[in-house]
Amino acid sequence: MSRLVSSVSLVFLALLLVLPLLMIDGLILSVGDVSYDSFVGCLVFLLCFYLASLLVSVIFDGTMRAFGGLFKRPISNVLFAVVNFWVSLSVLLWMDLYIESITISLATKIVLVSVHTVLFYLIHQSGDLTAKSSEVTESHDPVVKEALRLLENEDAVKCVETLCLRFPDRPKKDIIRIVHRLHSN
View 1 (cartoon, rainbow, N blue to C red):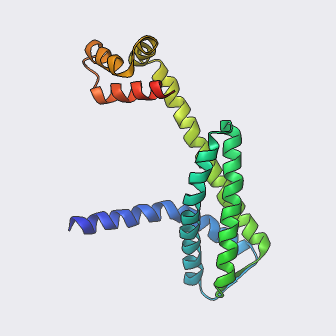
View 2: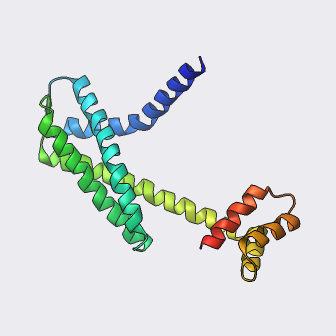
View 3: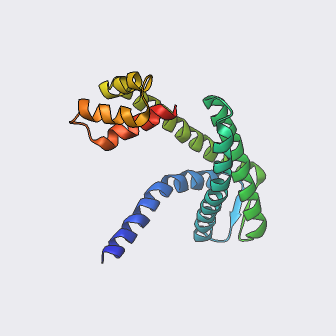
């Protein structure tokens, strides 16, 4: 029973995440130069495009994250968007080549992929802004200030031990995470 509930909740969550994208893409396809056999076939095509694009993007995202450290954050995000655009366009062209029940003009494909790229770029940017804001609020934390001071003269293990004694109300796991992050940087 619990598997059924968790499966239903996962499907519901996936639909909740994909539904807005399906609506945007449906609007683009209805306005663009597209011919398809059935509406359900068009939805299946879009879902297959999302899945194939996701699978191919996983490979390229790992590569981009590896090379992302070579560039500053804004350049890295733009590079990520450009690669995401070309990967998504390649997947869409490949799918359109093999699936004969739907025909999409090149202009509509470019608009579709451009909208996806802009959305994913904005999501990527918002993640960076969230990370920056959490770093700013964390820098005012007395544990972080004390950890920075201690790490100048002591190793990470001694720093964690000292901080656990000075801040007994903080969980040791949080202190270890803070010291590890600061020590890594």
